[in-house]
Amino acid sequence: MATKEDLIPLQVRVVLPTSSGSAVFLSNEEKTFVIYVDQSVGAAITMFMRGIQKERPLTHDLIGSIFAGLGVKLARVVINDLKNSTFFAQLYLVCENELGKKILQVDARPSDSIALALQAGCPIFVARHVFDVVDDMSEVLRKMSEAQGEGEEEAGGEEK
Image (cartoon, rainbow, N blue to C red):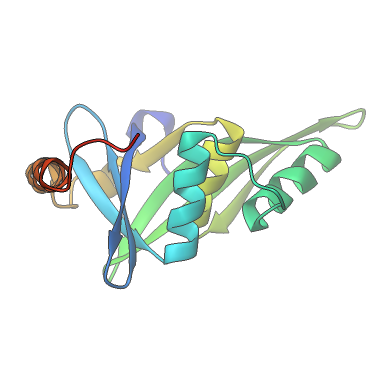
């Protein structure tokens, strides 16, 4: 288990479509890296980032409602491992009631963890040993953003 000193805070920068799903770009001032997720979770992450209200609850909304109903708070998400190009994550849940306080660590897919973190407004971290080995995608993201901006200009500018 990583100590707090081994954890690096992250922000979700952007979610972009790919041919097989979505690319979630996570970053801090030092580096940007990407986690590839399926399209439905990418859409959920985007909705949580933009604060879009849904008519009917999605899976992540349901989980958030269950947490609230049980008095469980999502304290943080940690992307804690990378094996064979697959990321792993843990949810840190706090349950406090008349019997005391309990902290649970639950294994979860990083994609679901990110969506739940954005919904709950809790921090996202990456373990130092994972952060040290991921490729820095800052330049790739910059070029993609520039290309997308040029495409919007060619298509007639901003949406109104």
